[in-house]
Image 1 (tube, rainbow, N blue to C red):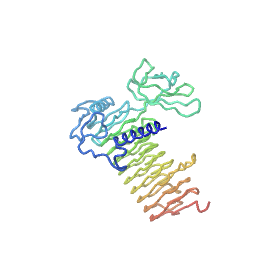
Image 2: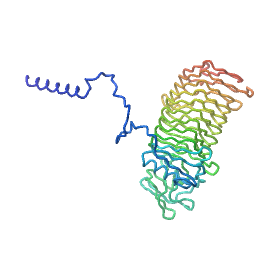
Image 3: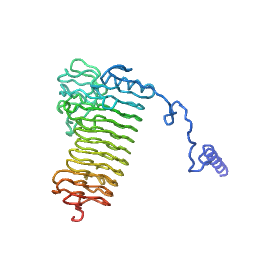
Image 4: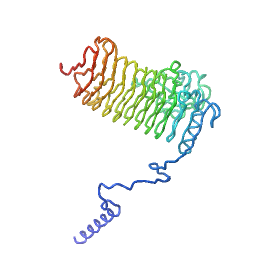
Length: 449
């Protein structure tokens, strides 16, 4: 027994010495590590970096530039060169650049245009049927007609899933060919069987990225050539489409005329969209997509889209401030499934085709509504048709604060309503709002249910 106690004592003493030497017991629980005041460039250290006075800059233009051309290939070459040197600026000189594939953005670059004089657009889209079955493990497709497709083209492959009727969507690049048979840059990982009527279409975002961070896009005009392209869902495309990215800043960017969304980002965190103009797109002006945390959408103009600002699923802790949303065909703002703890402040939402701000219903889960959101200091003017609604709170949405807004109708009152609250809605605070010109200021269905 004495031997056992002695062994145990020595073991505990060793543990204590290890803890002290590692600092676990030697330092207070709330102590902070030393502040990094003068960082050096250290191999593998991505957290701290000196603030260098100069990084590489590459110019792209039709003439008098480091890289000369007007296609996606010259833009991609510039982007890849700068990324290989650890990051820097790609300056896009005035001119029109017509893409046959998306420009894929790596981390740590700045894409700088010349405002309205630097225009990125795309070719007209072409859609053809597939001529042969392709299985999920294949890396090739065969087209019925390949005359308008080239090696290097960006395409989307779409098919109806024969098992459940859902749509399969696969984005790829054509990298080799023999006649109408094309190799893809990556495997399909989905079945494209003729029973599902699969197609290949020359559709793609203009700028796109996946799993990258710390990128700036500034003073650039993106035109989606809407009249000559079929619709491409905003969960896959747009003038700008980002997936699983962090810390992107879009500033002074125009996104227009895309047959889909202007700006869409999915599961992207700390994205800033500032002083941009997203207009005349078929679907959404700005689309903070599923799971995106802390988006900052400030001082933008979102005009003549189907919908101005669309908070998708699970977008949290975002701020939309100082934006003008004018003449969007359906809604100025739409917020719904698990979009919680967001602030919409000091925006001007006018001439919305149906509703100024819609809190969407979603009864598929226990608590999928847009709870704990603040609507403060906005101007909401002339919403919808004869039965239009400025703010519509549906479903079991709760803990919403509607504070100090100016809600006006300058047309005839008709059957228009300033604020409508659904019968199942929870707590809604209406404080210090200035309402005028409506047939009904507040219609609260909770009172009659």
